Amino acid sequence: MKWGTQTPVSIRRRMLAALLWTSVVWGLVAPLMVVLTIRHEINELLDDTLRASAEALSGVVQVPLLPPSATPAPPGGLTISPAAGYVRGRFAWQLVDPAGAVLLHSPLAPPEPFLQVSRTGLSNADSGWRVLGVAVGGQGQILYVAQSLEERSEALRDAAISTMLASLTVWAVCGVGLLRRMRAELAHIDRLVADVQHHDPMDPTQSLPPVTREELRPIRDAIDDLGARLAVRVRNERAFTAHAAHALRTPLAGMDAQLAVALRECAPEQQPRLQRVRDAAGRFARVVSALLTLFRSGSALHRQPVDVAAMVARMPIAGLEVRLSDPGSAPWPHADPDLLAAALANLFDNALRHGARSVVVAVAADHLQVCDDGPGLDDARRHALQSALDREDYAAFTGLGLILSDLIARVHGGRVYLGCSPQGGLCVALTLAVPEAVSPARTMSRSAAAAPPAAR
Image (tube, rainbow, N blue to C red):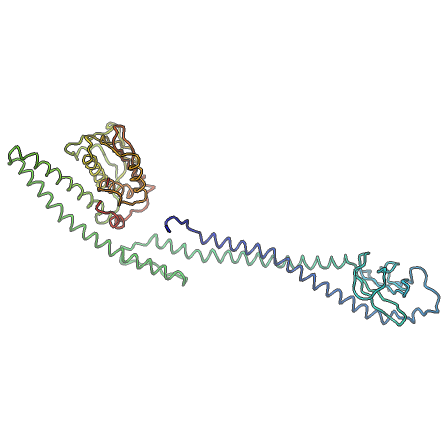
């Protein structure tokens, strides 16, 4: 499994999604459960009210009020008029004889019985009433106490709406509070990221600020420890570079001087061999100079306008013709002149070692292009090397030319791209980001550790 191919998952988005789904489920399920619970409880409460009303009325509406020998009740039964000041509601009652005739009823009760078939207990009438039947007296009479189903539905609706509004209000307040709390907690991660970005591990007087969340403490300590170990490594590399510059450049300069004297003093038939030795020593000196320049102490870029034509004129390479494609109007790119000179010198030497006799340098404000007339590379090999450069996988190269060029281009915020030159050889383009778009200067420690002694 390649960890580099995994797409990072945002903790912030996952937490927001979890909060959203929790809120949606709560907003749907909680009101539904509230409505079902209220419906059950209100139905029980109203049914208990009917029972209590029936018990109260059964002691009043008794047989003595209407003995069997009395005059038969008029059709529809007797209506008990409401007392003065009584406000009619949606509550009614009836007294029904064994034959199903209504003997007494309240003003709101219908003249016909609530139920077509006399029975006791709770039931729903087709006329829209919730009816409780209670046997009274000893002659089979039934007292019906009823409440309008519309009234019960209205009571249920009002209670459900009030409870749902209260529930949704609590849900909204809690959701907003949780969202604010989540953002406040994630802000500590953002603050740690900002502290790490502004932290300079090379400054021994600095350390990462303390964190205010226990879960972030191991991360902060690990980053601080890693920065301290990298600082020690960079200081050691800088010390090594300083000593290597003196230990390598002085002998190489002495070798070149001795070879120059030997060329003047030796026999003519020996001069070509000594010249080849001097050329090889010169290439070695240029490689060493490029390495020391790239990994020099304090590797911050020193950008400035670079006169590429003058730079090329100061680095002649025996056996290779170098010319600018448009020397009269070539722009001056903003780059580090030492690093740019090292990249060009190694590209020229690379072209010469692979059979080129001339190179053409094209200059733009944000890139350089070096095209030679050598044998070039076939498409498969060129694409393989380009893919390796894109991945910063330098193990596929057999020399330092393209590796150093790619490292220098990346330090400038750019890249190296390979193509075919019009002369049939290889064309190497170095892109250079404009100064405003370049991130803070990179240290060379990672690149130095990654670069093998290998690069075309």
